[in-house]
Image (tube, rainbow, N blue to C red; front, side, top):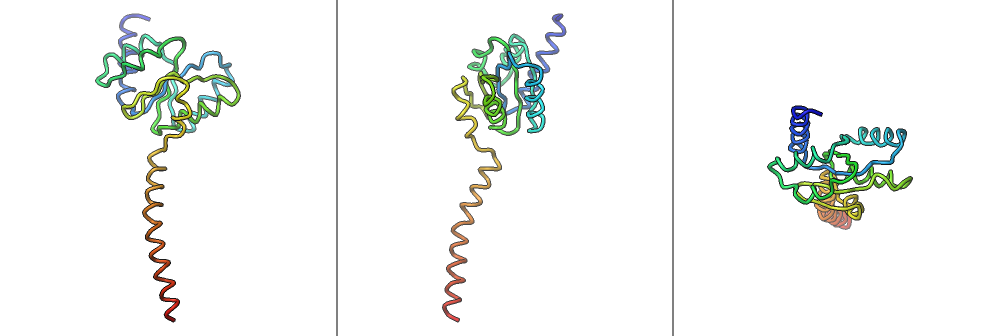
Length: 162
């Protein structure tokens, strides 16, 4: 790869990171072609972009970024794939699902809305993160509950008066 090609690749990765508030870095080495294809299909179906990246290029893209990815640079060893998503727990769920059949992919780290998670031991915590839609649904449910009780009480009161 020439110096110009590397510069273009770094800028490309930097642009992808700048556009993403959520991305995971995982090790997918050792997966056979069939499993890798299934992983890519599952990610594509969930709206997650997967790309195998060179650690040095990813590290340089992180260094030149305006965001602070300092802690994530420490996980860039071995093979790395980046999972870019709009849903915070999306990649974690897919990784956990694939881990039922093998020990890969293994989570190296994640960047979620300016929070950094390091290590495979964070996978369960990342799966438990609620999506924006789930949080909104819970809030609406909580807000509706007292209103439903008031309406029910009023309806019962009107039935008693009849």
